[in-house]
Amino acid sequence: MSISTRLPILDLDVLKTFAAIADTGNFSTAADRVLRTPSAVSMQIKKLEEILGVSLFKRDARAVSLTHHGEILLTYARRMLALNNEVVSQFIQPEMAGVVRLGAPDDIGGIVLPEVLKRFNDAFPSVMVNVMIENSETLRKAVESGELDLAIFNCSTSELRSGEEILFRDRIIWAGKKCGTAHMRTPLPVSVWESSCIWRTSAMRALENSGLDYRIAYQSGSHLAQRVAIHSDLAIAPLGPLLLEDDMVELGPEAGLPEIGDYEVGLAIGASGSEPVRAVADFVRNAIAAIGNRTEIAA
Image 1 (spheres, rainbow, N blue to C red):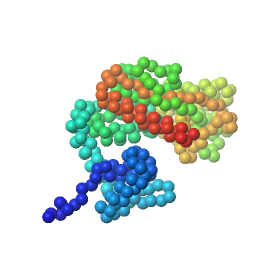
Image 2 (cartoon, rainbow, N blue to C red):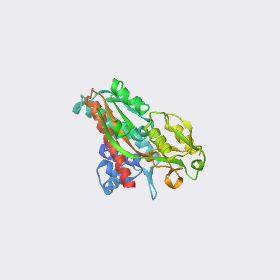
Image 3 (cartoon, rainbow, N blue to C red):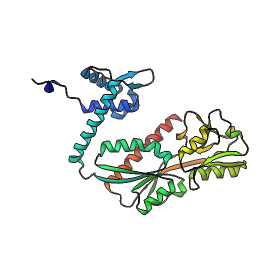
Image 4 (cartoon, rainbow, N blue to C red):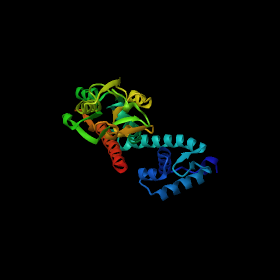
């Protein structure tokens, strides 16, 4: 008997579980993703480690991380899972092919797109998703003109147009540096997006109604610029709570700042509405719904 015939065959289902743990850094979260119990997931990984004769994860009290052998296996596991999906899709969903043009602003896009693009590619490897990062108003016009097939955008409910739907609603907050002093200065230094941004419009209205003396210290269409202004304690900025980072804090009436109000995350779908476009839209809806559920739990 040759060496090759004696080698064990790895179970793709087990590799899928292994990759989920690597992605989430948590056995319980991975178990939810692969629809198994945490004990079943642990048994799968134990068996996999026994087959390969190596330890795949380093464990501590809060999370797990890959060992050197785990990092090697993860590369192969992703290649094997991707190849499996590509082969199966040729027989089960051969019509799901083509290019989908998706737009998103850099703030919510940075939270939603990584999950959407990864999962969609796993499910439909024959469909390419091209991404445009722009401000919300530009993206909505691009869908209307046919330049994009669909787009995620920030808005208020009153601005909703034909072919658009609301996926998520949250507060707009003032964000400042933790232990910072920018919010104590007069005039109040504020960092904002371009004029079409709903966060800017709502924040400026709140400041005007409150009578606070303020100045626009920074203006940019990039979320990175807003983060830099906050991290440097040179200004505060209106943000969605999802964008708060470890060295940022929410500032409110206790800091002398007015409440801003709410905003919505919407989805615009173009007139073509092909099956691949509808599939991407479903993945976007599911990803944003998951964000909403996590927000509700945290609250």
